[in-house]
Image 1 (tube, one colour):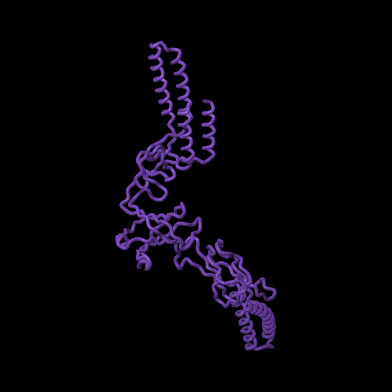
Image 2 (cartoon, helix red, strand yellow):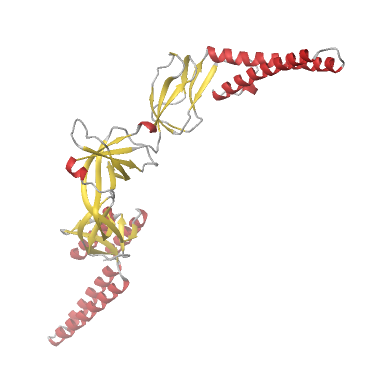
Length: 394
């Protein structure tokens, strides 16, 4: 008996360490269910192409396919003769501007003394303004390329191409050490919030499809909530199936484009049922059950009834002349039952599954707000089976 109790206590400690999750049953909305195939896609306006705005030689990639990048992150390095010329011209314009400024100041002094004409002064002002405008134009172009003009002390041919949006690197479009022309795409970028699913359904069903539709995409045991957008205007040429477009809420992790998965579609009329997590439902002794925390009063009541039953049984046997034997049996059986009942923290509740959607199952047999074991059911089930084996074994 002591060994059984020690085993139960150790099992309880293990259960606490394995993350048993208790949740409350709640009312959820369930409708007509459809299960169809869906393809993960991305709309054209969600795909980004990073281009080289100048021609040059592709020297280096700072990224690789599958890597997440943020706006402003370095993508690639290019050696550009055009950039070398632009930076050299900017430095030259700076020197010309300094000289033009000195000439303008000298002409202004001569003009004040009457030694230079108004025409001479205007000519120097126009020359200074023209050089300054050309220099400012180059400064703006260099800044748009990610080059800080004020930091230039000598010409440079190194151009760092940076990401202009957050996303996931899909493909490297150009091999290293390739000579590029201007506006050549070099990297394909996928925006992390731009995933969609096309669900394929029959044409007749599609034409009757209501506007209020709920979807859930299931990929290798992971579910993604989907928001229905609209019915695409043409059928798929290969399958001759209508196409429903859903937006996938998948900000937490990237998805693989063109992959196929199962789409659950929830259609009206909707009805509310008591819902529990799918992970809570299990088979126990041939029936669908959930495990609920044991009620304290229930165990005490059961123990009291058992005690009364043993007392009556003892009185009956006393009349037959076996008083000493039955008193010993009553005490042993009662202690054993009490010890076992005190050590069961969960009860088995038989339920009837009705329907399911997403990660929840609609059931009968449990009330809204009632607590149940949502996760870690395997460990609770092991505890219940060990308890049963311990009782029968004794």
